[in-house]
Length: 209
Image (cartoon, rainbow, N blue to C red; front, side, top):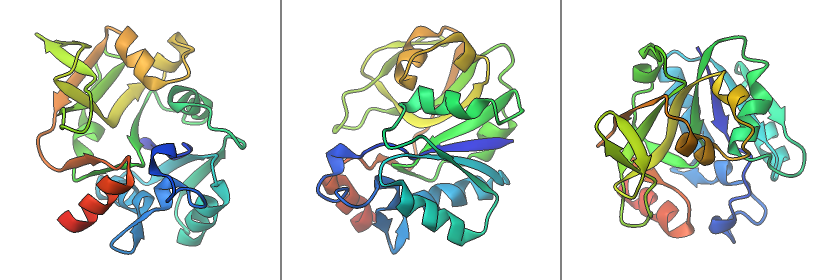
């Protein structure tokens, strides 16, 4: 099983912290956010990791190279391609039918071995949902066994995908694909999770842990 850590965004909501530093390299307890995602993947015995980079990419590249791990760096250029386009840019190199994706800018203890062992069956994706916290607007509601556009749940930034999903759609952003595709299963996670999208929430997670 292979995995992608999405890490190419500009982190504009994190300014001024991201003026000279990419968001995945902002630190919590002396370690960059991206290091915690690598550990989550390694804890699930997922040891082949792809990381896309664009904004302030040299900082991430130098850090990853210093780790001496089986991590593939995918350079998108100077501008991020977008979440779905970034994944699509990597898919041809995976050689597997399915793979895991996790955002670099979340804080969670979600056990990724659950996704690793999950069978997509006929679905093109399985995404992890979180009950919408008060600082986010929400992405989805649940109607029986299907997800619909709504506000009760937010996409966690964690999912397992079939490569065919990114051949079927040409959208730039993953959210647009998830709202359009019907063959998506889901699970709800009710333990530790936070979107580290602003300096205030970065400060909050530091205080919490």
